[in-house]
Length: 168
Image (cartoon, rainbow, N blue to C red; front, side, top):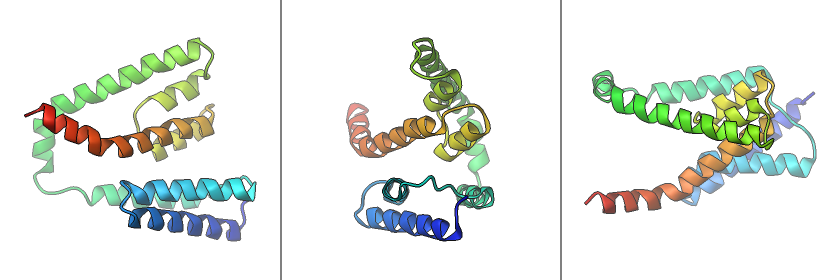
């Protein structure tokens, strides 16, 4: 069982890592810094510290509130106009993830649940939450999505410049 002190230390480590990396100007520094700091803390402590479900729920609610505040008037009209491209791109990502998951599972690299959740698009917190509720290897699902997030954050500025150059 995780103690209150462990929870406080995890939160402090995550906050320190997030603030530190954010102040360096690293893209997505708050998120990446917090994740890396907590992982390092847990590795150094050598204990399996997990947050209680009510704390996880509070974090999910805060993320939901943060996303909800991004809504602006006229957004639904814009989303209606872009519904086709949104559905096509999302569907293609899901199908591609599905195909990759089949390959990983068929070759015995991963069990089917872990392969599916690891290779499909989705918010890290949602996919981790889902992986804990089904028979999937949560640390491996985390590794897939953590790597995806870091790679997207690190390559996005370069790829956006390349994309804008190619679109001229």
